[in-house]
Every structure is written in structure tokens, then in C-alpha cells.
Amino acid sequence: FLVDGTPIRVFHNAESRGIPYPKNQPMRLYSSLWNADDWATRGGLVKIDWSKAPFTASYRGFAADACVANAGRSSCLNGPQKSWWAQSLDAGARLKMQWARKNYMIYNYCTDYKRFPQGFPPECSLEM
View 1 (cartoon, rainbow, N blue to C red):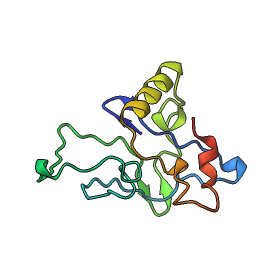
View 2: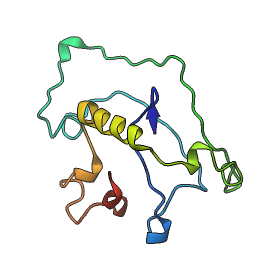
View 3: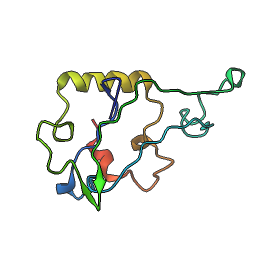
View 4: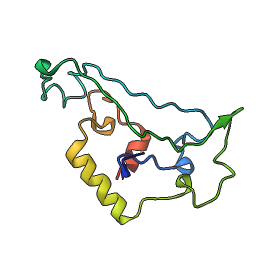
């Protein structure tokens, strides 16, 4: 997943290791604002400044480059191998993602022991 050309999340295809990969089912992108004091603010350490309310979000120039699912089949399955879904991050892109995560990531479910006391989801073992 990229935001303004900077990778922020990678979901590796590890089907060969028994980890499901979302390639044949439709997905949606949602965006919203809500009070997530208890989980998205480092366990409540970062307090919301309510004097800045109301909070709004807007998007300019939004474009989604995505595969289209139809009858359980993805349009990406027969696409060219140079397409985004057949690529990996190079060293420069990995550095950009590490920078973005260090400077902007507040919550990572792969480190949320409270949410997953019995152990993290299997894809978390693939995190960079």
C-alpha cells in the first residue's frame, strides 16, 4: 500500500506457508475519523486535543490502482508481470517505508499483545 508514492504496508504472498493471501476476493478501502483513544493512540498515551474539534479529513487527487474482482476471479491474475501486484520493494522503497513507519505509524496490529494474547496472526511473522 502506497500513500503519495511512499510504501506504508506490504502484505507478502506466503500461501506456500499456509498464510491466506487476498487475491480472489473483493476488498474495500475505508477511511474515517473516530475516537480511538484506547487502541490507536499507543494505548491511550497520546491524548486527543478536543479543542481542535471538529476533526475533518479530505482527499485530493485520490486514485486507486486496483484489480477488479468478478465472479470470484481477479483481473490481476492474467495481467503483465511488471504490474504492481507482481513486484517487490527495492532497497530504496524499503527505506522509505521504514522512515514512514518510524515517523507516522501509531498502531501496528502485529505488535498489539492485548488484541492477540494467544499469539499474533501468521502474517505478522513476515513483517519487515
